[in-house]
Image 1 (cartoon, one colour):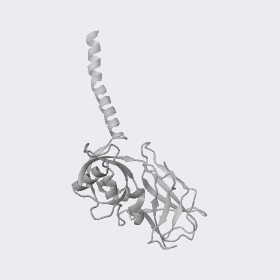
Image 2: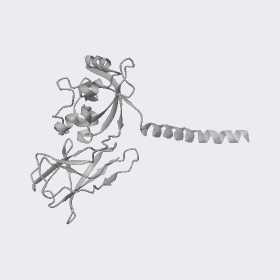
Image 3: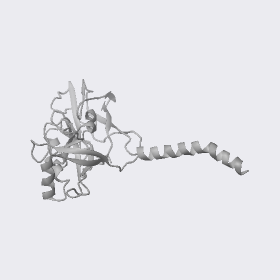
Image 4: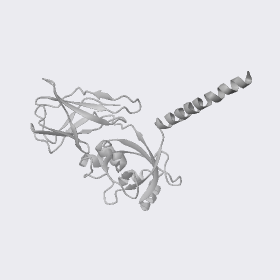
Length: 260
């Protein structure tokens, strides 16, 4: 009898090992709060804030967004999908670095000295425990860091559609999404004329710019497909406010919505 039970256990052992392996792999793959080890440098030729010529094409907005705590990224830029994403970045030297580090927004693409981030000088020094520690970090040029994706938060701001200067009503329509809250990516955009429900799927032109030639006429509804984030389900978001028919290049229009 005991021998029979032992044989059954031996037969089931591979199953339990596989189950344990899959459970461990799933836990690792879905670790939300885990930090990733990397390196960070800073813009050496900029002022305390970010650059106005970042690859996301935010212009001056990209230099001052989040109080100037912004960064260029290499692999996290993701051909523009990463524009506007927020990360907690903290350096790893316990003698100089704070526990919380700094929360930055991706506004540019770039890499230096095998880094994932090129921070504004303001953000770089904020990783230090105090002003003197921040100055010491600056003197090194690049430091070891760890980072994780976090939610962006703009409590007093709705998502805003800023019409790109290259736009020309009614022949060419291009825009950026400003003040994107939460920790999800905008992976698709649909532009709909609200009276006749004529819609077009837009292309990501470059950086954070979505664009189309011959846009629909009339008031426009911008519909955004958000990535699954922690929950795993993609979601279409339809803001309550439309872009008026007489939109102009350089104008910004409040969507009337926040996304957490």
